[in-house]
Amino acid sequence: MGKLHIKKGDTVYVNAGDDKGKTGQVLRVLVKEQRAIVEGVNMVKKSAKPSAKNPQGGFIQKEAPIHISNLNLVDPASGKPTRVKIEFKDDKKIRVAVKSKEEIK
Image 1: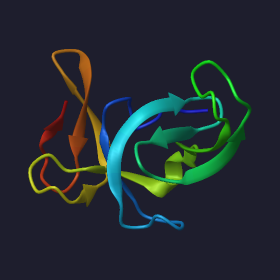
Image 2: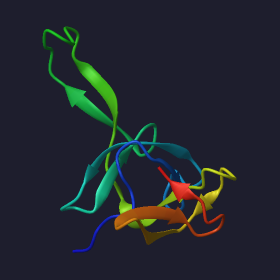
Image 3: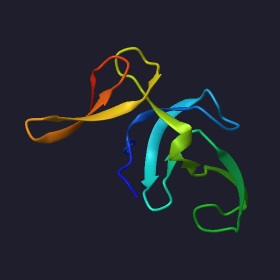
């Protein structure tokens, strides 16, 4: 299993599935499953028992994980989706947008 091109806090574009065309921030990356949870994408309804936090119970909506292959990073320069390549700068790995050749922080 290789390294993933997406990290927590990145802005990503969904390029496949029901939410194709949406963008959002990565809330969490599940490395072993190669999936990410993206804010506002792949929403599912889940039934919840009454609790102190939710005394009424009922249905709650939350984000479900989406596979990494269905996500592209958003280019910081143009705001459009782009692929990512790894370059070395001062013996450190940095992520670079393929389209604009700009570093992704």
